[in-house]
Image (tube, rainbow, N blue to C red; front, side, top):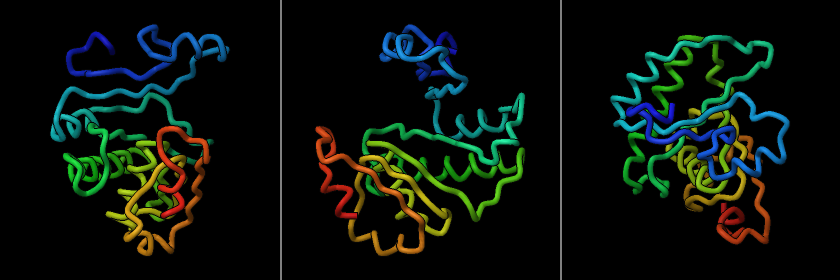
Length: 173
């Protein structure tokens, strides 16, 4: 995948190019089967990629499906560049995967850590009707939007010694 011009970056600890490869090799007995990648394209290109994806094996016995999109920017929220595209991409991903496997759209949950936690708060605030629950590890959002999320099951975890994101960000939500 790393050699493909359509792929901007591959996130997989089994690759020597991964920044945590040495640590993963020391801590793991294998690198696992989850691979994440950044596509070198726009929203339309990402949609074409998703439409071309074919599942090679279904893990139906697990009872859940994980879709883990990543923002192309380091900021989250409605004012962030590309936020509307990210929300549209997420919706397109759900619809596409929903055509391949049976998804109960009333039971969709989000999860995110750090920047991903900010993304979860932003997506929840933008479309609380689309989600049933969320798990947020270190992240913050817009406290003025918190009341819109009162019907959701939320699990928020944030260490007070976090050097990157102040715990006050999570407490404010």
